[in-house]
Image 1: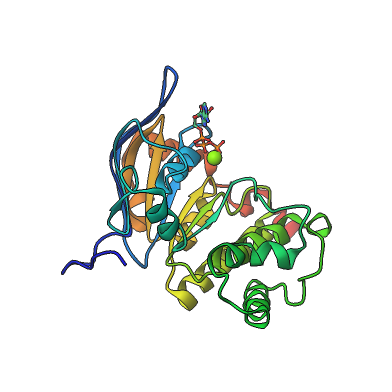
Image 2: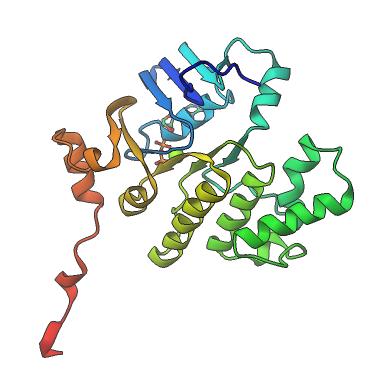
Length: 265
Ligand SMILES: Nc1ncnc2c1ncn2[C@@H]1O[C@H](COP(=O)(O)OP(=O)(O)OP(=O)(O)O)[C@@H](O)[C@H]1O
Ligand SMILES: [Mg+2]
């Protein structure tokens, strides 16, 4: 377990993190703290470095400078064994879904259990898988092939797999990408439900402002590798920063009333 200091520490911290690929600085001195029990969203345009940030958070990519702490452990210094233990406390949903097409839904959801909880007997393992599938609204889907699922169902399976170990933190890259507004909304509701049920600290990467405002307690915006704004959601949406204002304006759907044929229908 991480040390518990008198003031509850953030579960994840990035301190002055820089990451380059060749000539390009993808993350430029980013400092961010993700407080326990809250949902933090990171938004920003395509190529801003959001997915790279998520991979740096869990040690899949190393920063060129700066420090990343998971539960108080420096991931750049920690031996692989310690990282493995920390990752068990973190569920991850990658942007491309990354479900294993050759496995069934049940085998996909069981995957983290098979890696980290080999002590669990078959019946208990199956019970946990069934429970998580039920939580995400896919009861009895264990034997379904991945190829038979819709985009929204795939996101749900990804979420079930990410929470099967009942992690303290879930990192979710683009929960709403490729989904229609109705299905997006259902995924947002699931995130809120998992936060309530398990007290999960969520880190959500998103383009979707509407979903972000609904689920996030805190919002940060990455732009060209820099964190240009960060704060409570209510403050963020009123930001005077021209980059934030422009991004919000472009990404908010026009009001439905603009298309409403109205009384004369
Ligand atoms: N492994 C890599 N090697 C070289 N360049 C990379 C690598 N991974 C990411 N990049 C570059 O880093 C930049 C940021 O990529 P990233 O995937 O973080 O963007 P993003 O903000 O998640 O965008 P999107 O919203 O489209 O998912 C891009 O220019 C990308 O080409
Ligand atoms: Mg991305």
